[in-house]
Image (cartoon, rainbow, N blue to C red; front, side, top):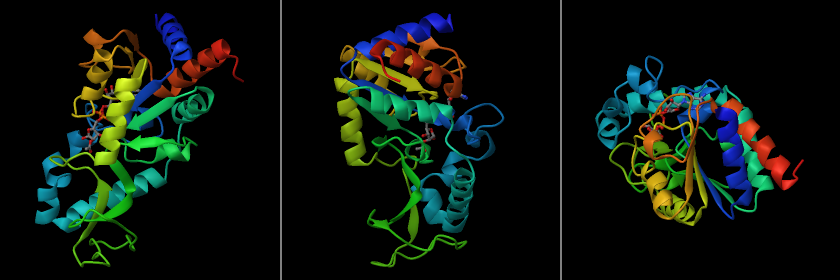
Length: 250
Ligand code: OAD
């Protein structure tokens, strides 16, 4: 079943002018980064989002929010990209136009050698001024958020919080990628958080073949053309090998 689905997806990708991949926390799960919603282990099963991942939370208790993100930053620095991240980087090099949109803030796609990554929800390793949104370089080892060197406001992690807008450049590029693609592959996402999840439907309405890699069922399933019920670190290398076999890549 998965073998036939992998073959079908590889054939569609090899024939496509543009392939767009939307990744979520499941792609980093095999590197040891916790997902958000998996039962028992997901981050939101252990922490309440509104207490940690919102501008209101930061205004109310900046030290706790800052320390939580420092902890997540340290978790991510201690892990390595996995075979799924590496396979996507190789597909980017092999295919004429592969566009990667990630909801992940862990930077693992770039560390795996992926060159162009649309970071839809920002990046944990970046800090920005909470007042002006401008990127700043600060000593982020402290237990409290440092002051912005320009305006003195608090510095915060450069990630998108609940209730905040997607960075305009990332939104624009992601919408263009969804509208332009012949194949949209969603890998390791529960597709519950908008507007990211809406990109899949947008691609479908523009005529794309839609596919997902996820070991578990998700809300996406009924509308998908191709579903691969496997972990991303196993499925993506298998997919890459099949695409290379069709296109003559190494
Ligand atoms: P979720 O935690 O909601 O979903 C992770 C998905 O990955 C689930 O559907 C799992 O079944 C699947 N999964 C688990 N292990 C996997 C594996 N080895 N291979 C492939 N899939 C696997 O994470 P996201 O969909 O990424 O936003 O969550 C979206 C957003 O919600 C995040 O970017 C974050 C969060 O709130 C912000 O922080 C703004």
